[in-house]
Length: 522
Ligand SMILES: Cc1ncc(COP(=O)(O)OP(=O)(O)O)c(N)n1
Ligand SMILES: Cc1ncsc1CCOP(=O)(O)O
Image 1 (cartoon, helix red, strand yellow):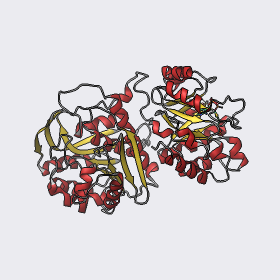
Image 2 (image 1 turned 45 degrees about the horizontal axis):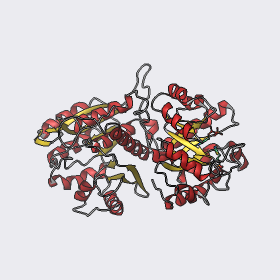
Image 3 (image 1 turned 180 degrees about the vertical axis):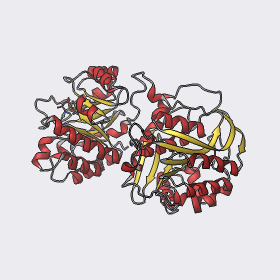
Image 4 (image 1 turned 90 degrees about the horizontal axis):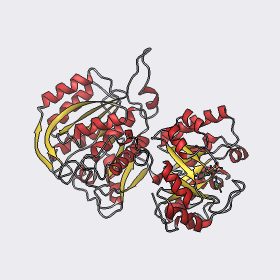
């Protein structure tokens, strides 16, 4: 928090000071979040959603209730505000006892309740504050009126680490600022940032006419547009609370802010997708299932953190090239990420196991701090030992179904496929994506049959999984790959175009720009 005192070392000391540390022998400190929000009797949003999200993400969550709503899938029938003194009693009770890593706020329905929250946060400082400025329910019911706007602007936002308004809330906080486009969202994020929060996430789910939902993240210097395909479902009640409490949970576990936001967005997207057909209640806004990640059905619930758009610029490392250019894997990976790589694979064919493990661990740290996925080529043992996000295997490596049983439901598995039959098998065996190529001739992999753009298209057409193209791809031909007519082709995987180059950072930036200018964007 910015000015209420307490620990103010974000983000440099964040990892080292939080979460999971053993305080004395046999005592384990569990990451802890406090949610200060309203109760939803239908349990899709509010306190109930926050508790479920934290449980699903492995974080303890305590709850201070500000209001009780009579609410179901048809809407909000009635709201009962708790007396501010009693909200204060609850706050004192838990803040004086627990060591919260993060406080997350939801429905703060009156100025008096915001006042008691501010007073208690001043008395009991916490490390981070996530503010979801809840104002109107999904069904259109006002949950916090315009009277709270000035205390939000003047006193709550300045001490928030991140605020997560939707476009209507952002507009209200900015006195009616019109937000109709992603460009408007960027302007709004900038103006909100000037009010004092360290990070701003403006959620664009309510913007019309886009097949993607775009959220705009601003850290005071840089913007990130986080896109995901819209899920056609009535079960969207509670998405805002879920996103904010997942951010809080990930921060409590030690994530950087960008990583927490990316994981939270994927969590919401995957929960919506998993739950799109469930039927709870008879109204227009159904709840979704926060515990999809715990289900064991291999086809539907595996990839709790995998977003196919991450395949956009897939950087595959190569030890020979790093040696040739005299740089470490870690430096190469860092430069690739800084240049725009959206996923990293360590493909170190000649590395000694022990040395590879140490390098892989360092790369995991870098990737986590940037919110970028890291996969290991072929080596299931290294992937498990360094807790990578998953593996990429070929047709002559361990079979995918066995890899899945070794890695469990949450890890990402990619598999190389040159034919429609292999693509179908990969899906049946529980892979998350396929890599298809060599699209063009390459010197990086010996004796590798080239399948061309036509072969790639055939594989994409047959694949139920997202596809990334590989083999001989670089700045000069990336556009021709992205322009093949295949909606599941999500990006390109490259080795030499990034790593057999003088400057990885420059090449990654150029390739990222080329891909963005070609047909598909994330
Ligand atoms: C994204 C991606 N696609 C394909 C490959 C090739 O993997 P594989 O067939 O296992 O060959 P090797 O990489 O082991 O030579 C890949 N690595 N990444
Ligand atoms: C690993 C792999 N699998 C198919 S082609 C290939 C090599 C890709 O390397 P480059 O991007 O340098 O052509």
